[in-house]
Image (cartoon, rainbow, N blue to C red; front, side):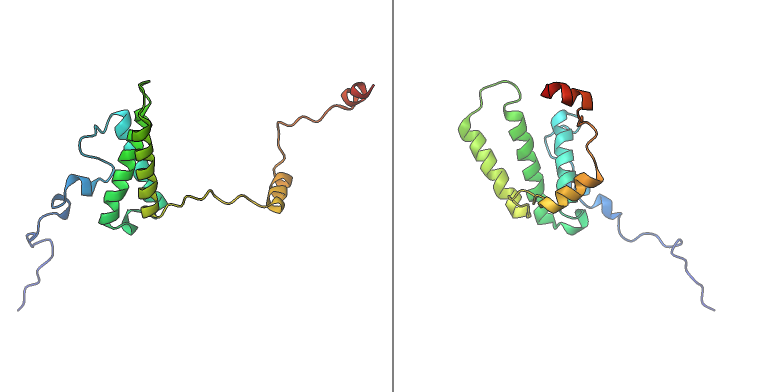
Length: 148
């Protein structure tokens, strides 16, 4: 007679995989040395999450690109904070930051081009379907008074 063994009766042979990875792998929204509860930390986390969403979700981004993504977010926060304190900003440092941000953005697949503008027909269809509520049409007596 063979005894059946349930998966509940077995002892786990491998530790929980969540604890085998580093903290930054488990939570890509953190950056070492950046306080998570500070304004910069929250902005960094928001940028990382926005980049992840723009690239199709965390499951579609290889770990090598996650490092580039984190660095891009860190540099963006640094560039935003550079002149925020009212201090003089080095043009050289700002240009280097902007160049590096652009290069990393392109490496991740973000385009430099602006989104395409709708053509005239699309714009007219939109305006016909959504009349602008704040445009005032002149009252008939106002129009007559202006011409008099």
